[in-house]
Image (cartoon, rainbow, N blue to C red):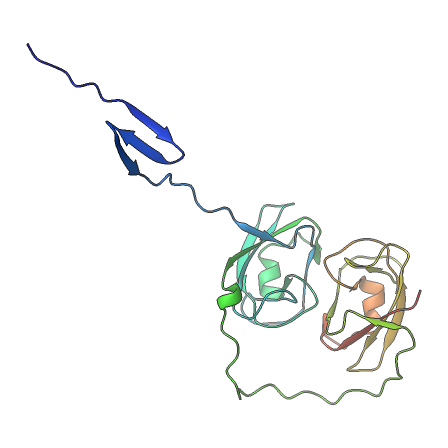
Length: 223
């Protein structure tokens, strides 16, 4: 008479139980993506070079995956410098995810996929690019906000205006380009992922020729 041994298997939160022996098994599920800056918009810096991003929230070397939820296109780039946005894409990176004729991604998903706190800082004493002398600008007359922020453009039409992730609709902001002394005062008309994201008409009032990014900006709340 042959005996057949009955084998009972059960799975409990990734653990396989066989005949009283507990064996831990891998479930095969990848770690959940580290989605950051939820609700942020993404725009472009107008800067050349291979695909890259600048960020005001993550150090140089951090890898970010930016997905345009309106067309499903994505790009993974490394942060190469500071900006006033969660993720500000350069021209090459933005071309990989843009919709034709648009300089702003309103529905974006930004994921941190590498680097971060472990990213290496620039070596001490490393040479830096020469900085052009600043233009003479009058002192601030309003409340200076978002110090250190960069300012870029949304690609949107209409009368001069700005969108902001820090100030409500109706707030008046004065944006001064410290590199040429030009300034514009605009009203916030909607949300964005930046302290101040200027539309085309407003940006034209303060831009330097050929540049879509103001690296040295002063932003004042004036109303």
